[in-house]
Figure (tube, rainbow, N blue to C red):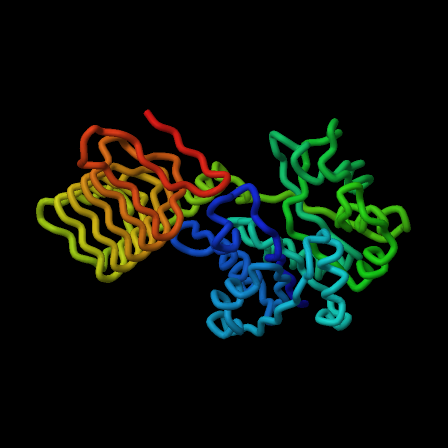
Length: 354
């Protein structure tokens, strides 16, 4: 069995972060989201992975490389435009070379992994299998309608969903899926929908099975989901302190601190991860915060946030929480008078001032 990871989307819901970085490379727990998907497939025994890439192909290739860091082989498959998940399957046919495969959306996180899902597929040998989860907002997803143990219908983002079972974004396919993706027409949004392809299999009497996910799953396409995924990942960490902690600092709970980190006169209350080379001075870092490499935090308070590489937060009087700061961001207090707020902000940004 081979793997197919989709990493070609533009990430419009995470702008402005995704203007300069692929959404699949935004870190959760100081690790790119995409890496969690790769590791899930590797843990299931997958040795060859094709990655669908688009406009951000250079960033994806630079981060993942040839796959040798996971002892696998990675092949990149260029998609000329976002034409739908079924189109991504279609252009991967040569790579699959007749093998069964697992398709994994690169911005998804499934903490329980997919090994059990794949093992069930290999044992039962259906033509396709879908992974489902109960969700509170099914109209935002592809939705499955079931009749007992049978998948009856799949609908993409229905206005009036008939179930709360959403397609999680992990699929298992035999070679029959290529007949389906070549037989469907583009949807009203001019994309080849994977739900239509699987529905074609159902209507043509192919065997489509399903598994309802155990544990948590997150589609990290929005800020709140990204922060929630970060929280869930940090809930699993163990304490590991490699950096320098001054005697007047306090460490509480589970904290992972990388090499060359300096913590001075500060309180770190876990779960927290702090990346290599970061400096924390006269500050409070609260629970569920990930601070990446090379950051500088001085006289500030942060919690339940994600701070990306080489950002600087200096002398902020009010606590920063529920935030995602991109790379090389500077947030500081002006010392000039008269006092005022001063911003340089990109498109689609959001600022809330207390």
